[in-house]
Image: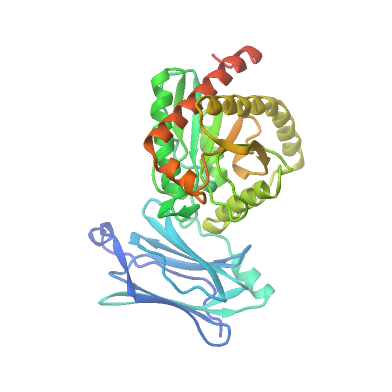
Amino acid sequence: MRVILWAMLCTFLAVTAQAQVAQLDPDASRIREGWIGGIEVTLGLSQPVPWRARVLADPPRLVLDFRNLDLGKVLPGHGRRITSIRQGTVRPGWSRMVLTLARPHIISSAEMRTGDGATVHVVLEGADEAEFAAAAARPEPPEWALPAVPPAPEVSGEGPLLVMLDPGHGGLDPGAEHGGLHEKVLTLAFANELRQVLLRDGTFRVALTREDDRFVPLETRLTLARQAGAGVFISIHADAVAEGEATGTTIYTLSDEATDRAARVLAEWHDREDIIAGVDLGGQDDSIARVLMDMARAETKPRTDRLAAALEVAVKSHRIVMHRHPRQAADFAVLKAPDMPSVLIELGFLSSQGDLAKLRDPAWRARMALAVRDGLLAWAAKDAVIRPGLRR
Ligand SMILES: [Zn+2]
């Protein structure tokens, strides 16, 4: 009997106990693909914490959220029915484990046994499309929903133009990983370095879409930029690619049609990672809003193209090796702000040994930061002439 499709168990503890962060005990935890189609998740915790389990669609996945729990390393155990496991912070004080399922499953039981520590036990069983859709469609109770409008980002500096820096990935979305280096760590480090360089100049104010290792949905990154009144948006990445010999810096702008297959795969991967890691907030704009957005985009596009061109010139003038196609276009969700020039810089590729060494090198990153500053300065000067009223 499928009694509990959606199990939510909140163990409300004394305030003193809640302040302590519980630990996941990997030795007392296992994920098993059991008997006929079933999946069994057992997690040993050092103490009980509020938690919940639910399934979500597109792709089918089990999402486990915990309050004040340090999940530590990703558990082994994926195979035929679980195609990937990821975990990390989803917002301050909350961690999330996401198990991507090869086919639809629903929760047949979910419980936390307490005693010496606590044990979370979740059993999944195979379901047909209709059963799964019903379970996945249950609305998020308000107390569990990610805040739609996050707190305003902190803006530093005095300059006339606000630059929104967007360190790619974060929290339970680590991005690429090579040689022990996580993209989310690198992008945040570089964004902080670039902020210092930009602030020295006096032309810019600077804000970041995230200041620490947390998950920020792609749409929220745009909301933060708009909230802060950003004049330009720069997303920072250093991905890995499976095919080809991709090396060197690449500057991406938005286009419905990707420059090539690799660019399209990269954009799809980014957007899909975001959906898997978080709850798909799926902004549906009505047709009137879409027309207005298209008009704003048409006005913004030449400004974005000039920004990408200025950055390319600056990066080359700092003798930084660029990709053989230094400027590319793809359908990145994070570049879709209709009214704000937006670019995505792939600093390099973690999958390339040469690039990896450069990305680790503080001197190389300092040169890259100067290049981005120079590109922004050149663009902003020209943009202010072409578009009077920008500098108020
Ligand atoms: Zn990335």
